[in-house]
Length: 581
Image (spheres, rainbow, N blue to C red):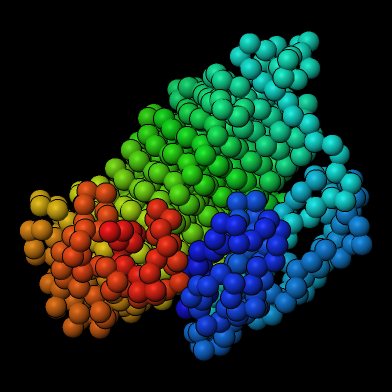
């Protein structure tokens, strides 16, 4: 389970201790690290003084202590680098890599590649980020590589305002354009499009390395109707628009989606790729026809940070997630609010690898809160990386507050090595399922492609069901003769509580639904060491109150801050919040 461990570390240096682009040794951060992460490992800080968790993902496989691994060797990325002596706009650059112990290797921009090789690309943007992903039966590894041009053109800023004009304006602050699309069509990779106060139509982003954001101190709204089937989405990010950044924007409407990331996956071409390295920062995405954000296969390394995502499914509420990720890898969702979602808050499915959701508030969903896996048609799986059709591989949910869901707070479907820790679940599974549900993906009734979940780990999670709420804490399903889980989950240091008592733990795999109370569940499963059946003493926002049994009773799994950014004690509290007197 070592590969899961590394995803749980939050890296942020104390303010004033380090400078941007300075190498930082983990020993300098004074934090507990898994044994396999060496204290002299170095990373670069970004402008906010943080180490991007995705940087850690990329190097983790090289620092592995075999004692932390399951039997067998995990993939090791020996190198992934630029071979060319110079990186010049318009010229070819060669990437070189070497991977050990992998049964499948994937390079963005190509798809499947050999374990050792080279590939050449044209430098068409000042910055382009490539990802190398490797898997075998024991784990996953990945690394990203920023290709930065030595001779980037001077970046321009283009202004757009409702009072502007596309012709004959020049896009300057004093002569802004009228429409975002007109500005896009004149922009070059590396440019920024500033939208001033007002409401605009759609934008179709087709160029790499563009930033679209509200002007400083202003708020721009991109909006489309949900009733026009000719307008599938408000913001379309094409497969070539790598390193797109949307910042401080309000985005609503679209017949299907507010934002869609496109792919060539189903074009029938030998090279398959999607919109990679997209960032959604500080955006409000709402009132969409179906999903708020749709991520299609091979759209990797998406970052959603500090976003407000709500009111999906205003036209069709039958399949309308807050975030729908299908076979996209290295997805990171953090510090965001998902609410009033017609179906599931968010899920990683279709074979998503090394994706993560952390420090989010997810509430008032018509389906599940978080899905680590769900149900995908077989044609959308990458069998080179994922020959057993797992829905979710090495994905993580930590430090989330999940409340008022109609179905499971956390659902686990066809997932291998899922890890969820320090989550707080309040009043979940109101209409069905259980707070934690192991479900069966059906894969369009092609049952031979279905694999049960396995090697699932849960630590320091808290369940609180108020008076009148569901008493179903956990269930393991059997559907169409298919088991939802191989063996039992590895749980410890959990807290389960229902005000009305009578919590139920269900296991249907015998063919009849076995219903256990807490003590019977412990005997049946052999799991949940050091877990409690006790009132965690929470307030309505999931904050711990004085005297809570969650305080200082958790297991240290390397999560150094809580949902609100508070540093955790060496003896951490259970749940998503650290107690603050």
